[in-house]
Image (cartoon, rainbow, N blue to C red; front, side, top):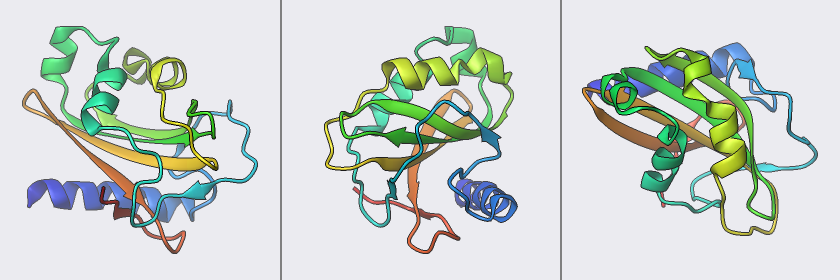
Length: 151
């Protein structure tokens, strides 16, 4: 239950401060071509196993960093029709410095998805707690609130 409250708090803060522009999180990475794209709503459009996403995001971290990580990391990825990722925005509320996360390179260079008919905004929220990593995929129907997306 505590985890749910933590995710909810993070998401409320993100959404209220951004008024749901194209970028969901406050730290914006300006390297994506933002023409037309859709948000996931109640089903996953860009399908990739959570474990694979976690593996790629944390691949450049040493074991000490992985085991001592605490907090929440939220990020938004634009996935094009070829399955290429582009990090759009993020919020780092972990005990790891943003530079050490190596998030831009990990996502843009290594996170590959299956081909899709259109560009999709994928929203990921990871929680690091006592050496464990949990992850949720988020989406929106009304462009104001985020909800968990099911498989």
